[in-house]
Length: 503
Image (cartoon, rainbow, N blue to C red; front, side, top):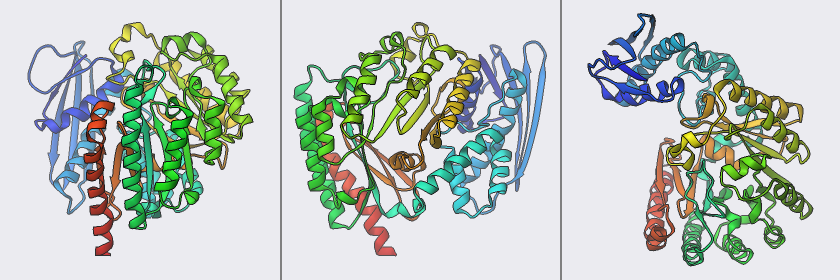
C-alpha cells in the first residue's frame, strides 16, 4: 500500500504518518514526492499562525473521496519543538479520520502510537485538571475512545492507591538488573538474551562485571543518601544462572545497596519454568525474595514448541506448585494473545488452565511483531489471528480477570502490536508490582545494571529523560563495564547533586 502525501513539505511528518498508516495496513510506504504508483493520495492544506488549521482530502484509484478538517489555537510561548508537536497532532487528527473513513476501521487509541498512554492522564492530574475535563481533552486532542479512557482512569486510580507518593519519588531510584541468558531464544523475542548452554565462560565474566557495577553504584547511592524504591531482576531469564551464582548475586545486593531491608519490592523473573529448581527457590527464600514470575505464555504444547520454548505445559504447572509450596506468595504469570496457530478456542483453554492456579498477578500481552525477532523475519511461517479474533481474545481476558477479582494496574503498547491493542497487567488487590508502575510511568530514575540493561535517568525537577544503555552482548560488556559504570555515575552526579545544590 503506497500512500502519496501532498502539501506537507516538512519531513518530520513522515514518521508519524508512517506509524498511523501501519495501524490500518500491513505493508505501507509513505511517499512525499510526486509519483504515479500510489494506491491512496492525500492532499493536505495546512495553515499555522496563532491557530493551526488542517484539511485533508483522501482519494483512491476508484475515485472515492474522504475529507476531514481540524482547527485549534496554538499555545503561547512554546518552544519550537512543542509548537511542532501541536501541529503534528493536528495533522495526525485529520489523517487518522480520513483513513478510518476509508477503511471502516476505528482506532480505539486514536492517534496515539506511543508506549505509555497513561502518562498523559498522570500529567493532567499533576497539572490539576479535573477528571471530566481531562477525559474530554484526551478524546478531543487524541481521538481516544471512551473505552480506552476508562481503562486509563482505572489504571491511574489503582497506581495512586498502590503508590500514594508516586509523584514524590523523583529523589529515589529503582534498579533493574539484567541477566542476558535463557535456555533458548523465543521466536518473538528481541531482548538481549543468549542461549546459556556452552557459554559458561561468558557467564562467569559477565557476573564479575555485574558485581562490579552493583558495588560502585551502591557505594554512590549510600554516600549521597539516595534510597532505592524497587529492584527488578530481568533478562533473559535471571534463574538461568546456577543457585550458587544467584546466592552470590543477592549477597552482593545486600552488601552493596543501601538499606535493602526497606526496599519496597524485590522481584526476580523466573519466567522459564525449565530454569526453576528447589535449590534456586531456597536461595530466593534465604534472601527474603518472594515475588517471582513464572510465564506459561500459552497452555498449548504445540504453540510452545512453535515459538521456541522448550518446557512443557506440565512443567509450568509443576514448577508453579513447587514455588508455592516453598513460600513464594506473590507469583506473576504472563500470557500472550495471538500466538501462531492460536485463536479463541486455544486462548479459552489457556484461561481455564490459569483458573486452576490463580497467580497473584497476570500480565496479558498482545503479540507484537518486533522488527528483529525470528517471527518477524519469517512471517509466512507464523500464521496469526486476524484483528477481529484478537479483539475477541482481549475481551475474554478483560472479562475473565474481572470475574476472578483481578484489577488492571499498568499498561503499555508496542509498535506492530496485533489489532493495535495493548499489554495489560492485572493483579489481585494489594499484589501489584511497584516496579512495573515505576518503569511505565517514568516518575523516577531507573538504573540499569548488567549486559543489555538500559538506564532511564529522570531529572528530579524538570522530568527530562536521558536514556543510557549497556552493551547488549556479553563480550562487549565484559570489555567495557568499568567505563559504562563511570559514565552512569557521572550522569547520576549531574542529576542529583547539582539539583540538590540548586535547591
